[in-house]
Length: 97
Image (tube, rainbow, N blue to C red):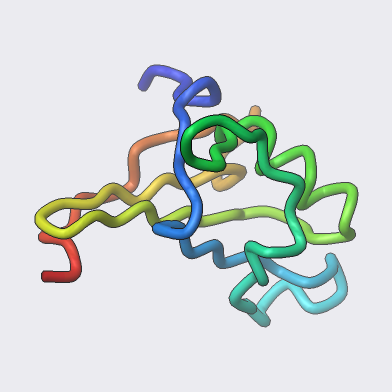
């Protein structure tokens, strides 16, 4: 599988699921995307690599799941389920419309 760490996702069409700490490795939480530091352009964006780095600095442990959805399609990315950790395509959605 190819590493997708350079893939960009755009605010606010992102949902992130992570583990709050290693001791709570079975508990998953929805991360508040407003607490991430977004790059500014026409639309705020982050690469998957930047998301992973920020989540780790915030104390979250992997695996991380990033859902990026638009009206008619979406993608789910996963990080850290394999060794060595890498960003991978986990699934596809039909969007929120």
